[in-house]
Image 1 (tube, rainbow, N blue to C red):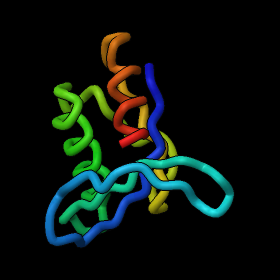
Image 2: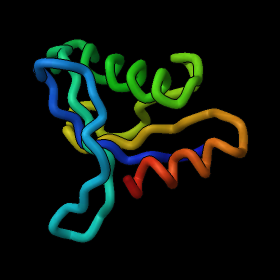
Image 3: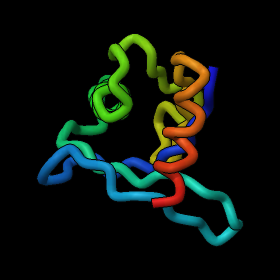
Length: 93
């Protein structure tokens, strides 16, 4: 199991991964934008789908586990061990 922190902007014009950023406290996260609205878990589902597609994993392999109603979310990613390298590269782009 791998963990990824993302900051989500709902109601965006397109679903896309913006890239890594650092907040004022020094925490690293991946900024993502989704078209879905932030109600009834729609934005969370869109984030899960976007990250899974980018990593080449099934949608069920990515789950929002923290921050369900916040912009900053923790994702659990169930994938092969080599996914760790892909996540590291994603956070350094």
